[in-house]
Length: 334
Image (cartoon, rainbow, N blue to C red):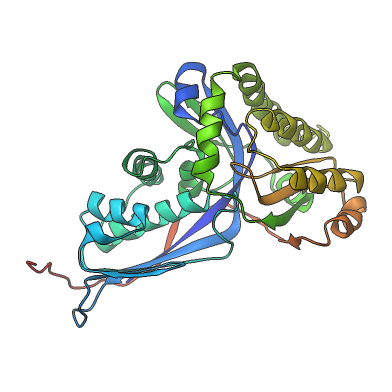
């Protein structure tokens, strides 16, 4: 049996510039971090006592003979891609899917990590990210960018730069004390479930061609924010103020990114003392993150009392194998 643990990501700046249709021409970048909320994927070969050959357990349970019968598109396509057979795959997570934290991509990365390990192969972080991008964007034909797969595979607080030749991952040069200070000023709240990210991303992708100026500004904010984090003398509160600015830019890209209720929640957080914040992910629901100085955090908690508060800490590992027990397996001729 193989069990993988893969973190979820929190994207601060540059979302939307990671669409291949945009960055191949204009370049792009995101500043994001992974944090200590994870999805877990366990994979083993299914014992041959049943009248089905594969068992897939997530919010549903699928028991099928042939891979083509699997409904879950990522599992079905990944099993074909990696030539996997006779599996029991189980998914579990600390936070819900469809919540703006890159959950589907974390699952894809963790699953591919587990599949490779079950075959006795260890892939690099980049190989896992690349395979997950290919699985979701090509084989599953889902709309969206490529930052989530990269963040989940590599882990950490990074600038991910995109260009005609692909992507580059660069850890932010930040002291541990300043990193802890940033972490302590971020507050995360669950607003409710969003629509499927890929559904929202279709509208976002269509809008990108008309929003080049906004997207170029969003890219520049990535590097401005990186300089604030790296400079011990810079005012960290400027990071929070820039979050407010980038959220307003992002809301202007496509109509489905925000809703009236989310706008009201965001305004309430700002009135209570947050310097800035944003809705994480494609939009339509999910998690709001606020940047709040310590003296205003109690007021923001009160303003958000109808929402679930999620404490968290940054993490650096990315996807890892937390259990690796070898199996003897020989494929049967079916």
